[in-house]
Length: 460
Image (cartoon, rainbow, N blue to C red):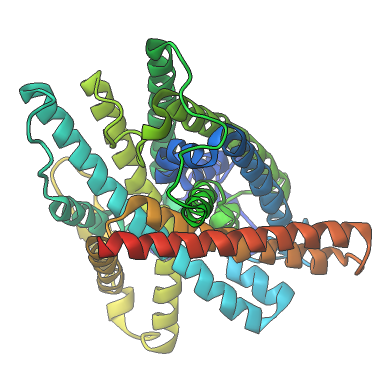
């Protein structure tokens, strides 16, 4: 929730028709989208490709890129209603669902959306701890040799450390104040994706052959193969869609030009760049290690040298996840704080009085007690869940399956149909509903497979 007296009005700002200052451009929108989409999911793509094989893996990566662009384009037109250019703003995803589809569907959307935000935050905590542990192990192996016992690292300690940093970062008031964080996160995401891409290519050249096969990693039974296949699809689904956060990002864009046009262009650029890196990381990682492809490309037992480059890549991942955690958590912060203020604290200075904290070498941190209490509690719960379920691939698969449908497919399709008044049984209507139905089935089976994998991992 924005605090007005904390805003600094830049010289190029635009005060829009709702008296809100927006400074977002095409490239800040691309940065926000890349921060949202290129995250910890990229590290599991080689594992997913290994489960699907040389035919299914690349096809799935390309198809999900197409699905992501279509859903984001449909959703961008729902930012304003009833006209996508001159209509009333829907500043959040839930607002758009409420205005276009009604209150009941907005409740369902809200529950699913916030579960996805929360699940993504948990996945980022687990990934950060894994990366910090990988840095420690790489340094240990480099000093003592590959036969040394370097498997002991305190994963829970790293999660607590990540949580401590997030308590401070969570005092960022809102999306408008996150541009620098998103730019840094987007840059670091390109760096570690490029390193994974390059290391995979270098390993293939060193091996002198392309590992893997058409059907992917063999399984003990047909049932196991199906579960692995659908879990891999869930992991890919986790790595692509950003519809869950798109309207919140679009609400930062200044106009003219129209916000939906800027967002569609930004989505096209971001999806192309993402797809290129995803194909490179997924395919070259599988080509390098074949059936032994690790679940996490840069933290598994695959790459070991040059250790300094792998350590640098993991540092970039951690920096990116620090920003990504905030990107997915800000909507929850805004929702909870707005609700508490409107219902219980409308005239309470506890919710309004601002304080400043100046630490050495850091900018001034502005906060109020409501924000500090709500956001610290949120961070603490994500750390607690991460300690209980520290399983990277299973968590990303389950979150991805839930994100794919209904948030990334069902609601954008249905809102587009209502807003554009697409006639029932017309060609466009049939195409959209087939698109909706196919992705619904795929999402359900991926969710079941990922939850089964999570239960199995917890019981081991």
